[in-house]
Image (tube, rainbow, N blue to C red):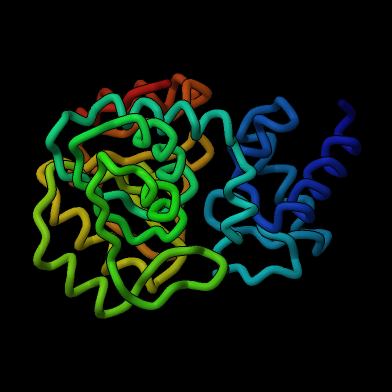
Length: 254
């Protein structure tokens, strides 16, 4: 692909999806992250896109806005399915688990429907609707205000409920992961909810696809020492995997 063709492809992808990470674009056009960063700078100089930490947004989008749920659900779907299945393989009968909101955590629902003797707590309305029909599962949904377009409950009701919970495992999501800066998210409404989730669990497992690495979002969530294990796709660059493991961080590729 010629440089001009690559730039056009990148610009079109960002226009369609509103937001793309550097890793996602690198996978799309089969070049290095460094090349993508140079291309993004060229497009930004032409006022075609707006640069963000770890990626870029279409010029018409709000730089601090979170991509719509349906947009996010269409990205790296097969990878997310593998991550969801691997997460479920960690669960033992009789456990109480807490499921964060998000399109990667949502992919746990298919395997969870086949399991028994679990208590599941979530603030994700779509996850709850999938699991509500399973008679062998005890399902608890956190109350609160539903974020339109994102199917998650937030606010003081959800926060208050979490402060009184204790669970065996938390399956957490975030918008960006950086070795030094930890996990971060785009929406400020969810920061306290997610931090309370981390505190509620004996173990915290982070579920993220490979495009979330080496980037930062608007709100810092936690350091990586709060995470017991990261499950991500085998698409993640081996250099990143080795850096995380050298830092003592458990990372599982699926």
